[in-house]
Amino acid sequence: MLFNSIDFAIFLPIVFILYWFVTNKNLKLQNFLIVVASYLFYGWWDWRFLSLIIFSTIVDYSIGRKLQNEESQVKRKALLWTSILVNLGFLGFFKYYNFFLDNFITAFSFFGQEINASSLNIILPVGISFYTFQTLSYTIDVYKRKLEPTADFISFSAFVSFFPQLVAGPIERATNLLPQFYKKRTFEYAQAVDGMRQILWGLFKKVVIADTCAEYANLIFNNSADYSGSTLVLGAICFTFQIYGDFSGYSDIAIGTSRLFGFNLKQNFAFPYFSRDIAEFWRRWHISLSTWFRDYLYIPLGGSRGGTWIKVRNTFIIFIVSGFWHGANWTFIVWGALNAFYFLPLLLSNRNRNNLETIAQGNLLPSLKEVFFMLLTFGLTVFAWIFFRAENMGHALLFIQDMFRGLANKEGYIETFNLIYWDIGYVLPFMLLVFIFMEWLGRESQFALQNIFSRWKWPYRYIMYYAIIIAIFWFSGKEQQFIYFQF
Image (tube, rainbow, N blue to C red; front, side):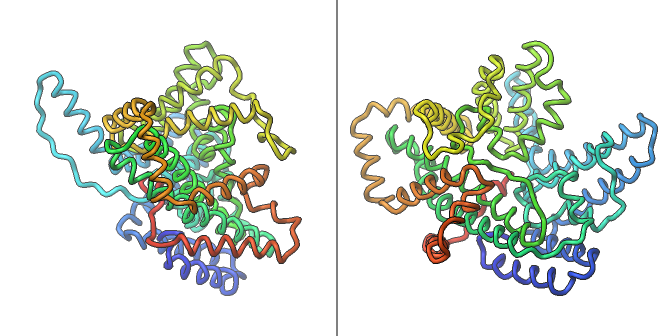
């Protein structure tokens, strides 16, 4: 079920009414309603894959219970590895089976050995990368005795399948989300209103920004051989805004929806395109995944401790694995490695934690130095996104080759101007300017709309809200699937 669909527009109010007016006096019944609603939400796409979520839930719940009273370290490790192998086994089969098979065949063909093997027509279950990591974090934390295992199967099931963030995150830790299912929730008007604001802004990002940019990003990337270098740059920039509006928009809707039900999820995006270096960008982009890899892979490998070789090795491991998490394609691995190259000079010079505060904090405008580094970081990010968007490595390399080769072509700039003037028009550029302006004003908040209207008188505040709603309906058309559903 898509957030930007009529189905969800009907589903959400029904669940909200049942949650607060029918089951509100019984905590277990409320949690059970969340489980049922979550399974319905997920099963709306394909009910057959509910079995994976249920099986993963049973496995990790049972292992957590066994770890509670097990003192033998050998048995504890065996239980932990059972959870890891089951969860990553499912993920590996559905997401990476054909990738490894094809590369295995290619490798042997290189040495003159022909292997006959058939790829499988495997459907990738929506959200499997997200809920797999969420359940794994629970088992690992229980194993490390950072978290007491739960005896409440309904609460645990609700934690694993919580519908607002089930399909595309944020990837919640059990230490944050699971205890919220144990406590009685009371409806808080201010929290619900804040949640609605965040949903509204998330829909604006998705429908107005991401889906509109997607039209031109797809046009240019899918026909890249036909366009000039400057037009290819335009396509890369369109995708840059598409993926941010799409993914951060989903996170905003997920977090806002959770607040309607009395839950607080962690911030997943913190205005990453205003970053002044790549290290800051990765502290602000897909925060739940970045911190997951930091805590469960980077630090156990040794983190930044040790010599230069250890730092370099761990940096490349964390970024390449992060890239591979996104998909079974060499383009994602190269995208991750490229970000590692971006990050490495900062790490080796101990400048990777220079920009911890928000840019131009407390000021309306940034300094010229901040503008320079922000634009430089944005440019590096746009370049890296080319690999992320390309169909394969050949497409990515040809795209980049044609882009740089064609930048000196004056006729190409005329082509780009005509594309913008005749096809794109003034509406999308205007909306992008409004979007960037609103994000800049709200950059010190959890999301753009949280506080920027708080000092306005209510008529002006509601005029702006209705303007955003009208823009969403104006740009809405065919329902567009969220990009991260494929991950």
